[in-house]
Length: 256
Ligand code: NAI
Image 1 (cartoon, rainbow, N blue to C red):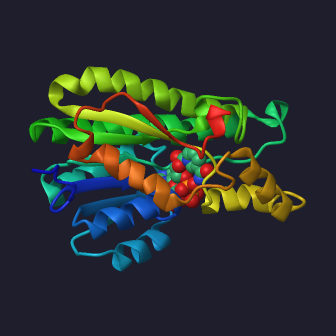
Image 2: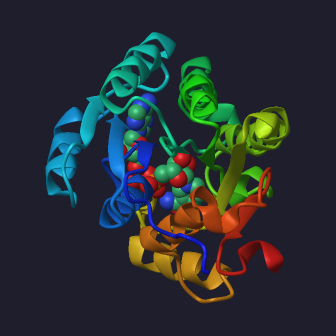
């Protein structure tokens, strides 16, 4: 008998679900019958996304994941509506531009760390009790190749994604006895609104896209759907013996 790849009836939380990789992941999960709680800073876009997804009973919760009390409120609402959580996709993240490390001030530093690390940690923490009560679950964190090599944004973004890789490994070990698997994906350049904005600010965006593509041995940037496929694999029973890993999805960038 094959492994059940379906998410039918699974209760899934996706943060940063209104755009890019989070949106592609939410769409793919909804196609497979998941019941979704979608969290995002952008409440308007999130409502449109929730209404456009396959199936019904999805929750759209406008939340700033950098605010720990807001995470608590959101997860209580999810608990009331879903009576448990099977999967958490910890995807919300930011990569604001800075000319160099000397141009980064405390506000910039705190915001990147608060969204990318603190928000991710406290969403994972909030999912532990409802997953444990169900006998287990899976958490997939969005890291980046920027957490592995000195490339792709700012030093602070890179540090935040390095922290995500470390948190993934520690939580995988800590939560294994509870039946909770914790993994990360490490994408290279993925053509989403985040990267469109970064490249769009450069003097010659068309040339910058060519240069970005050339950095990846497969000769192009990736798509949000390609990352979503990897997230679904790590969230599903297909990866039942995989925990504490960081799945690199970078068209060969870090293999060079
Ligand atoms: P995106 O900018 O298209 O989407 C991010 C979503 O997160 C947006 O809807 C935004 O409103 C939401 N968000 C931002 N701050 C938030 C907050 N404080 N609370 C709640 N929601 C918030 O970005 P993209 O490219 O889809 O990125 C998703 C994740 O993938 C991020 O963690 C990013 O660091 C990571 N990643 C992206 C790569 C890329 O090349 N696009 C490469 C490697 C990692």
